Length: 325
Image (cartoon, rainbow, N blue to C red; front, side, top):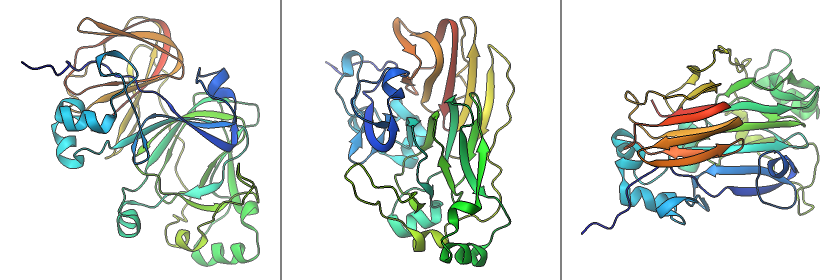
């Protein structure tokens, strides 16, 4: 007799990360339960040392890696299981920046594999909230190459050559590996990225961490990892309602928006991977094969690859829909 529970849309317990630059909006605006300066809520993670656990239904308490061992392609899809095995390939976060984050970049696939035996880190952001005059740091404010960068660095001039881009709610940005970037103060965003925690920090505002110590910088490692060209980061997308609107397609993930004003049935028939929904505005209820789960702003749910029939009941919600093409 098979006692293995049938799969259903899965929620996970957020893994909350206290950060010196964090604030309280993850708790007050996104309903996270935690004290202190909360900078990040890891919604679904297979990163070693921070493995997500199911928070709903019959599989409550199970780690996502153990689910992969048990259910294999039923969770993630056959191709993805073949490529990644029991390693969950994406990391989903909500981030609250009370202060500007460190200026950083992430290595590409080749460098990450060579140096860290890790995936590279391609990521994207969706701005959920932005205070007036909030901005992001994206690349440089003048033409740059290795020699120019090294000269500016030697003169302690890095902060002066960074490009600041104003942001508002609804903006979205693609952060390719090598892009120098930082989330600015007053921004709350959703982040989708490859499963990797490799970061090269190049400037941290001379700010001590929560333990009162200056954080390590990775000046030398970053030199040949930086993409010195101007990044084409900001994404343009249609504001069409009650339809799937593509934000970005990469080999690592595809991200769409669903701006819903009424009940909606997404067509998952051509998608062979798991599908994750992040609620960035409003609230909805996901229904699937006799199962239902509420989703409010700041919550995330994973629809296993074995489930293709779902529908949303709502009077108003905005969702990010993410899967692997």
